[in-house]
Image (cartoon, rainbow, N blue to C red; front, side):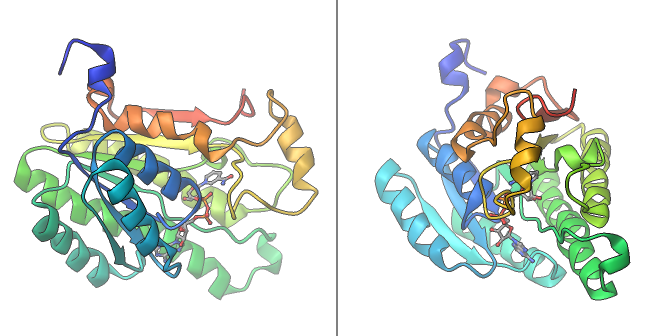
Length: 254
Ligand code: NAI
């Protein structure tokens, strides 16, 4: 670890994979990593804009970048894409497991399909990505996993009914902490728990304005305001951190 603190934040020569990278928080994170010098693999599901975004990052920051289409709820797609990234980039230093989805309805109004969908992306998807990244990390003898959870893992977010989503995020947080322990000899694992951010998921109906106002800062977060946290966790600046769950919510959960 360099002694100069700004140097500790550089990611030159590192390989960072981000899923859910076509838009929202994932794209902001991929941009931050490339800006810090990392080679980046952008995983996307349905939004092909990721291909163009990846080319943009490569030319803007003079790094290597590629986009991969993966449905994280399909274990075989996750395992084969993980190996393709290793073939293409040589290694994986950091995996950011960020893909997620929410169906904001009371449980009494949710169909079982809606329940299953959230479980398959937020729970199965995290397990598959972590497990197959973990095999790579163990083989390499190093690695860094960052999982995107939510402040909903800490509280029942009263203005929106998201019972299944809330519970899936509690899974993500506790799973992440458990892996920090399990992988202590070869990888770090940390958890980011965002509050309301200005993404597709965060941009809900007007009634959410009330929710934003309940945070201490009285507003939504902008994705540019979350970049620094992921960069910190991905970099040597956080080398003594593992198993931490960092809330970034404008002072909502107090
Ligand atoms: P978003 O809806 O813009 O991004 C979600 C991403 O996940 C999209 O790129 C989407 O394509 C991807 N995804 C969904 N299903 C997938 C699948 N089956 N396979 C692969 N990728 C899939 O929303 P946002 O806000 O950027 O979400 C990122 C993460 O942040 C999610 O895990 C979300 O739960 C979490 N989060 C967001 C908050 C917010 O207010 N925006 C608050 C707390 C947590």
